[in-house]
Length: 267
Length: 291
Image (cartoon, rainbow over all chains, first blue to last red):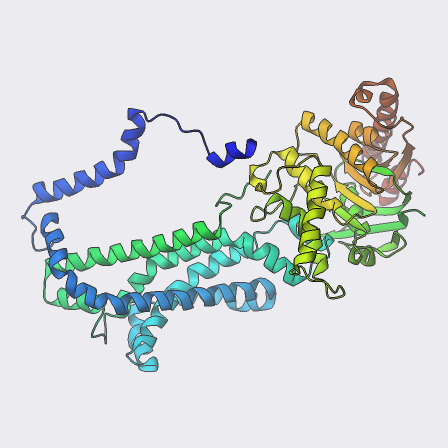
């Protein structure tokens, strides 16, 4: 009976007007801003800030073109994200288990995070060619660091008494990794993955700024130099939506992988 | 045969380049099916002592035997289990799978033929875990998540996990220190009931004099800086023990005695620091009382 109670969560309180207002507030704010943009700014700044209604119309007009270019951007983002995250997690495990390696290499991983991706583009194109490989590498570089840092944090978040318990149970290093460290790192790992996922589309777009014939990045460059402001805004909004979508996909996977919830309560 | 024998065990730590004597010349024995409490001021090395006996920390000198084995060997054969102040339950495992954990780990050990994946061993492991849960009074909570349980219930799960390998020895390191007094009383009674249904000996570290007297056959009183055994007090109270005993004059007799020993040792320690700062003075001040 206690269990049923817990499963149902907090008892539902009736919807009061105050609650409805607080739920609606974000939408009221964004609606208000859009309204001001549409009617107060209007056409006065059309060369940089075209009216929202025109942008929405433009999205529909330009969508077939964007859709044709979306494929390569998304695939570069997904593969780069997967590679960068896998490498980040692998490095985190290596750092946690090898103190010398961690001491010598971990501080320098910050360099990878600090490099301007735009400047890396010509270099990577020179090394890996102008195909997908260089673009995937850019995304991987951007995804690597958030996953690494969070995974290290997660893998070392295990309490002393947990380790002592495992030792007292005669557990091997392998047991401790699979049964304790990895599962307790998941909430942290997913924080890193969500940061990386939301940045992966952006990194993929940046990677298409040069030497690319297709992709949303290439389109944005074309629109930029053609001063096609409306199309630029449309491309911007569609890529933002892609980023948010990617974030949500990871978030849903997180919910499935961590059914015990993010807050690991200690008694 | 005594389940635990300690002979002249010492342990020191180096903290910030300074040597700190945690335990000095500790000797005692724990008999079969006996509850022995270790009590003393914080920092007296009680928890350290438990970890030495459990083979989680190496000792500097002296001899420790657990069920006739070295601490490390006793751990390999799972002759003992630990219960900590924190219940240490894994939220990604259901209650019953938390209890099964020791079986899983020790079945997977290379010297055993069965594996934890074999359906028959799985079934027996589950049955055993369910049996332990009903022993600690948590029947019906097998599939619950640890996060849904109260503090007292979480400690019952930890107890069930400690019992599943049927170890002859259970080490409890301030297990109920974080619980409220009412829950604590309840857990004391439960511990005694479970103990009487098993053949295990319990080595119990606590800060509470009353708890130590109530549970134990013997109370070992420790001093601090360095941790030395001051007294070994046999508690001659009838079993089974009921909560009313905590209010009984017979119980007060023991708690008063222990309180006096602790106060005396504290007084000597303070006087020793006042009169002379020399190490000899400190050593003589701390050596009062014989085991």
